[in-house]
Length: 93
Image 1 (cartoon, one colour):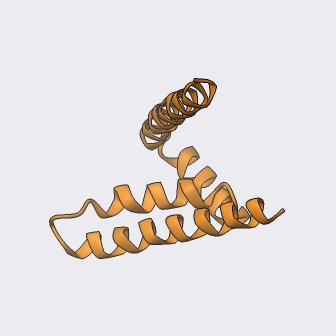
Image 2: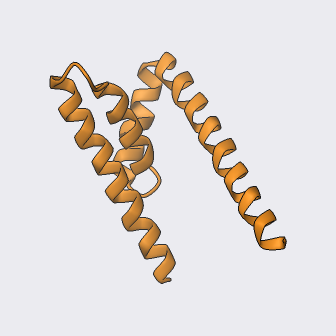
């Protein structure tokens, strides 16, 4: 139960941090504001129904964004799966 709460807090902090960077990035030419906002919404959608609805509406209105988010999602899943596989292999040794 404690692990689930820590995960939830981590997801919320990461999501809101990305959205904060996105808002700053809207005004600074160095950061990609929209990209960070989309990533923040994607992360928050795991824990927040409001973020999930916003992301769903955005995906329906902009199919190109939907395709991009699907590619990011697949990349992150492969990345985390590889990290988990490496960690389990290290434990087995």
